[in-house]
Length: 451
Image 1 (cartoon, rainbow, N blue to C red):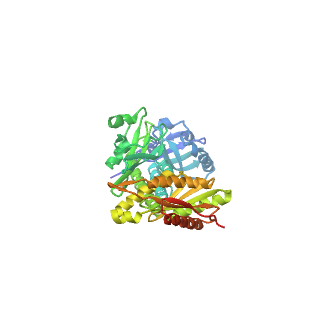
Image 2: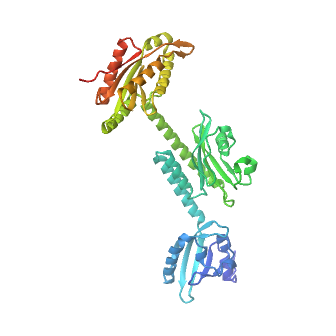
């Protein structure tokens, strides 16, 4: 193959993929090669007479002007970067080589479009940032915000939401929801007909343009031009939710690459959500009784210690009620442990109904329970609650077709009269409870004041 030695230089320049241009000292284009249309969207004749700075991203103008001044003083630049607006509105990243020709009083530059490379670098950085956040951020709300922040650097993500599905209660909720037009929707069943619900139900990503939207689910598009991208959050065999991007611009479009990025994000986020749920379950098991879901002994004592500190600091009073159920062993022996478990769950439920939201009911073991009455005014406040407990817990229990009768024996210890520490109060209330039991049960006894 032989070259054509007579091909004019300007025709050779027009064959290059990079843009070759000549600008005057003020940055006005004097000549531009044909590649300008591919890189900037403008034909050469549309660029000639315009300045580079009016096409440049505003955030890059000051640094570029300072660099141009150095180039004009005879310091060539081989690899400086800045951003320009393409004719259709999107941003293109440009790497320049430029040199000042003193005799001609012009600057010659070669512009290479590096938008794809910059996008790939941004994507890589985003993936790393999301992976790091998913491993290190403990609070899910903080993680959702961080994911939204990172995605916004590489995708149109002004409108971003996280949908989670609770299969046990058939409830779809939106713990994170940012939308320029709409408020977070209320919890709803999976059969609600929303796009998020469809992604979760199918376990498949869904990419829709505004034109496809009315045909798919007309009511969702509403009055807004809407491009929509949703991917499932999958944990093991289960789809636990969805990540959703919405775009109302009417010009920007989501594509398959955006879907792949969001699917990576969803895998990281699903793993983080599952870790958080597992941690929460372990925390619950460490602090709560599995049968009744009441605070266990450790958590009850922790809350009692905290209440004592407040009471000592602010000169407040509190009471500890210690109780167990009369005839519980008899019920276990005659009706079985399953009936005994049902009885304990019902006792826990009735106890909760007898106290304030601010009080604590705990199961200390077996059929022994304790109640912390925080910030009471006088001893009678504790005895009133004890009376309510006696009435409530002495009522018959209908369990698995059997009518069971049991009643509590209670001991009451008050701070500061009956002890200064958590262990003293518990021990004194326990001793008073045994006095009540030996006296026939179904009653309460207040600890005798410490002499």
